[in-house]
Amino acid sequence: MASVSRRRARPLTAVEAGRGDWDLVVIGAGSAGLVGARTAAVLGARVLLIEADGFGGECLFTGCVPSKALIAAADAAQDARDAGRLGIHAGDVRVDFAAVMAHVKGAIAAIAPVDSPETLAETGVYTLRGRARFDGPRSLVVEGVGIRFRDALVATGSAPVVPEGVDVLTNETLWDLEELPETLLVLGGGAIGCEMAQAFARLGSRVTLVHRGDRLLPKEDPAASALVLSALRADGVEVRLGTTLSGAEREHGRTTARLDDGTTAVADRVLAALGRRVDTTGLGLDAAGVDLDASGAIAVDRTLATSNPRVRAAGDVTPLPRFTHTAGMFGSVAATNAVLGLSRRVRLDDVPRVTFTSPEVAAVGVSTADAATRGLRVVETAHHDLDRAIAEGRTDGFTRLAVDRKGRVVGATIVGPRAGESLGELSTAVSRGLTVRDLAGVLHAYPTYSDAGWNAAVRDAQGALRAGIVASAIRLLRRVRRRRG
Ligand SMILES: Cc1cc2nc3c(=O)[nH]c(=O)nc-3n(C[C@H](O)[C@H](O)[C@H](O)COP(=O)(O)OP(=O)(O)OC[C@H]3O[C@@H](n4cnc5c(N)ncnc54)[C@H](O)[C@@H]3O)c2cc1C
Ligand SMILES: NC(=O)c1ccc[n+]([C@@H]2O[C@H](COP(=O)([O-])OP(=O)(O)OC[C@H]3O[C@@H](n4cnc5c(N)ncnc54)[C@H](O)[C@@H]3O)[C@@H](O)[C@H]2O)c1
Image (tube, rainbow, N blue to C red; front, side):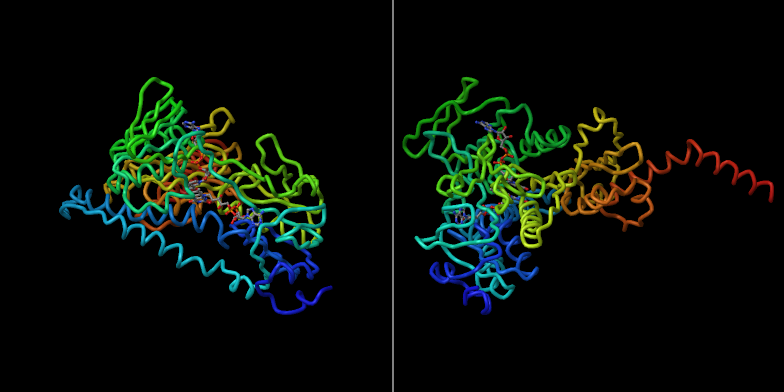
């Protein structure tokens, strides 16, 4: 055992790292790698975390944090414009884009210290800045220095898909904008496309969104897609469905995009939100004996093992659901399995997801749209019937639960303000196999958006009282009570 790992954890040079005797080497300090490394350290392992760029990864620098900070500013602008509907007149709304971007950068700066090498050292994680490449099944190289490991966790993330030959912004470059584009063309109607199209429209850009599918957010309940489409159009976004980019020319600082339906769209800037690709070129996976799947992602089983039993993978580099919370949870499971020699499996049937449009779309488990084909029933509260939504004048939404034959909640979709906050309870229900009766029996504070799921559960539980053995028991008790006078 080399000298470094007996001392207190700290940032290392490659030469120092090369002298270590590592239980676990983690490649990539994004959500998966950070949580994986911290978990390993908590379990007492000698763990080295290697990062080529910024400790914090995509979520912190180019993903969740900047996008949600921008959305907060955009929503503030829209709330001010919209306040007239409640009798409040704020006057003309002026957007200071430089200040908005300063807020975005401030949010990143405020969170960054949590993921810094110094903070990681306090939790027992050694760190190394540099790009890692495997040169064998139990070894890798950073800056020409060989580092041996007992186990490794690959958490190197993904990159945006970009159309060939078109000058586009992506989530990696969007945050360098110094001026609000007067016109913006957004390609793709998934989470990034919808969130950013609405945010830029609310900040004052004229936005066109081009999506090849026939509905936005194709992974969600179609009723949610329809509400988001209406909301985007109400915010002034021109949404073109069922078409895609076939080519583009850039002249005089503007892009003319040709679409395959024969139309064109002209914009100052184009944002590509076309999904993700995994690029493991340069990672030496051949030398490590780690196989890829057909999409180019690292193939893993549910224990997050790769084809090399000493190498695990987690986060966007795998084909599993690509979110910060899955990256973190799966990174932790992979690290636990590596450090303790366990085979804990990750679950995919209770993964929650939230799209931060206005209204938000939050879902967990089985899609409520698939309920009928799976023999499930759907119980629902339309937000037109929800007192909190009525009080706020935000009734375009619903809360739907998919329920199996045993009464267990196996899926949910919520569309409405703060839907992501209401989802936690329904995620617990799906994850822990709770029934609608369990939910109905929990007192909920009034008036809240989480009332919607509760009300649906109460109605459903009351329905059950009118049938079968429970109804017979109730009738009997009623009769006995009457006889007693
Ligand atoms: C605009 C946008 C908004 C998003 N919003 C949300 C959201 O609201 N909620 C949500 O849950 N998810 C969101 N996501 C998804 C989320 O950001 C990702 O799923 C998550 O960050 C993936 O984490 P990761 O650890 O797998 O990869 P990453 O965070 O990409 O980390 C990989 C790290 O590996 C490093 N690396 C790569 N190769 C090497 C190498 N050879 N050697 C050393 N280091 C290397 C990289 O520099 C990087 O830091 C969003 C994504 C985008 C793009
Ligand atoms: N709130 C969140 O949790 C959140 C927010 C943003 C991003 N993310 C994650 O980031 C990742 C990337 O998001 P994304 O929105 O880029 O990907 P996505 O795969 O969710 O959506 C891309 C959409 O673009 C469409 N598309 C693809 N090629 C097209 C083309 N040539 N022309 C027109 N449309 C085309 C696809 O049909 C798809 O629906 C996802 O894994 C997502 O989960 C999550």
